Length: 421
Ligand SMILES: *Cc1c(COP(=O)(O)O)cnc(C)c1O
Image 1 (cartoon, rainbow, N blue to C red):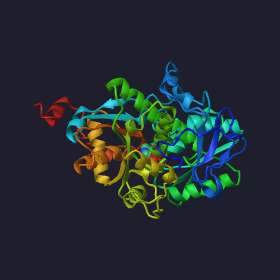
Image 2: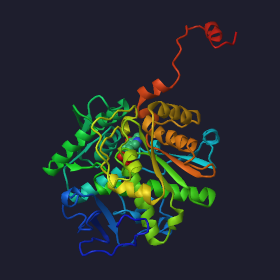
Image 3: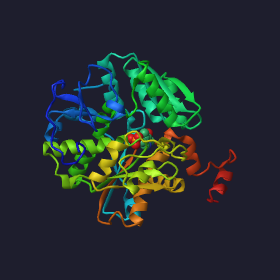
Image 4: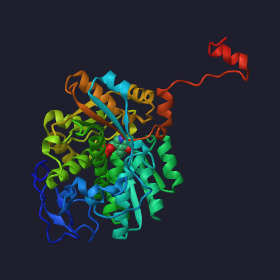
């Protein structure tokens, strides 16, 4: 199968443009990348961007920082940029000690321009939209995709339309979409319903779809994996054993796997060095965990989903056919965590000075659970991905954090209050 970790680099088909083309991951059918707007292959199969020349680490040397450092792994030399990527790989010594692993680093994607990793996908996706000459960009979103699309659309001088599940989007995210001047359609339904609708709009040619179903977005998101490998190797002279990440539509899981596969294809990475991709979902929205536990080739749609981690409140992960081979092919696993465990992990990260939204904390909650179960070994080098910034969801932060204490406008009263008198 074409998504195996050790599959050789493909030969460029006639339809390739500058060594880039699209391929159906099920049938292998190939398509020219920019001749027409195409999101899927026959029968809705997922597409993937392919390259005649997969990248090596040397290609990235001296190419600056951020997403476009990795242009050798991308379909363009530059994009619509704010700029994005080059996020911190924090140490978290108390948390590392407490969880009990050899190394723990936190790749904080909340430090991107709009506060989530979605920016990495949009810098490429909006560039492709310009190439195709489309007028109106659109997405369904649990919030962060809409914030990123609104900002990158604005940057690119394009009109944007976002479909959001009514009442289920964190305040910071809607505020961003609103100020960057997206048209916001609040749908009386969940994220999966919004995605069904926006796919219909795209099929009718009304909008250019920038959900992670769009294979070009995942190209930008590959750079999370490339940054982690380079930064970890610079610090320790080796690659991490495991990368733990929250899973919603499984775009990141697919993208990181693709980054590793391409490095294996070029000979830059040994298959044995590829980190184990470990996906974490909330118990109330865990179709990927169900598919991994049951050995299924695809997920079954969950009609009812619920979790405080609204960014991963998704019942039908569209990228599952790409992500499941990634989890299995790297020897990883998937685990579901409770909302309480997510909030506890959010507090754990905050105590290290790292402010994240609930979905992001799922990675740390999942690591803790897998360590407790003995699935993760004490000797492992682990990177947890935190996907979005604390300020995205101020309500969740208030709920998880300490409460403000009213005091009189009086020094003595304040000294009394803090126990200093
Ligand atoms: C989009 C998003 C996710 C889910 O990522 P997928 O690539 O869809 O699995 C997780 N956390 C945050 C904060 C997000 O915005």
